[in-house]
Image (tube, rainbow, N blue to C red; front, side, top):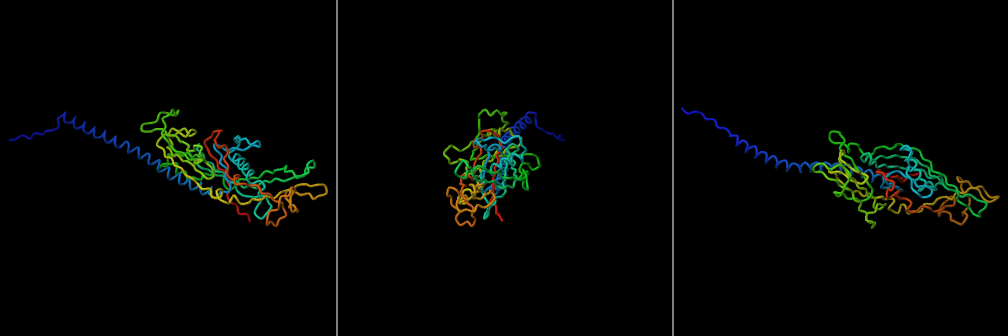
Length: 368
């Protein structure tokens, strides 16, 4: 009678099999690691594409037909009477915005009047905040304004009308104040956790890996640092202006090491550029004649007292400037605005620092 003999693996055979499986698993992990890396990169790129498209469409929809645009690099700033630039500080967010908006309205709309009227121009001015300190959130505020005006006053010591008085515009808060205009869902992952951040800067940039001493912690495994490079080489081809109104967008992970002040980001990140067309500013719209009434106050002895808010019943102002052609009014008019008045950059080189960008603008207003 035969015995049933059960044969198994020897210890040496088991060790050999385990070693073979170990080699296979190691190879599989080496293969999966770059795949996982690509998946992470793809998720950031997908977030960049979706959010940037939304941001671009909102910004372009708001600014495309703007009649005047002023871009503040770094923070809200104002031009003083001596033409120097100072940062608006020590005020609440709304007061800072209103101070900058008032300065903008004064520069662009002083003496402007309503269509078919001699009343000061009225409209809305918008302040868009690109808040890079808060992950690239975009906020916007609306303010109502009435333009100020200048008038000429007779000075006895001079044999001429001399413009000596300028009234300030008036502003009041509109229907919304510092309202977020980009859906916060773009900043979250599928579970609703903070996942992505965005950095938006003016001008055309590219991103390149950097091996310089960044001052940031050593990158994690399979990560590196990238730095934004401004493509403006001084030739004017990529200079940020009303015709090359371009913004660069960087998407990066919320937990990444960054130095946004110097444009340095830890991978994975994605970068893209968007150029927007300022239709009204780049068209003949701003080249049309804008005429302003010459407001007079006082006069020679025995003459009428012409007040700034009353019509001047004369065909020509002192000095012989002509009445606006085709006008039924007997006001005297002067032409003042030039195309350069409608687009400006405040502190172009961001000499005072700051990571945010503010865009102040107006849209066409239909006066009834």
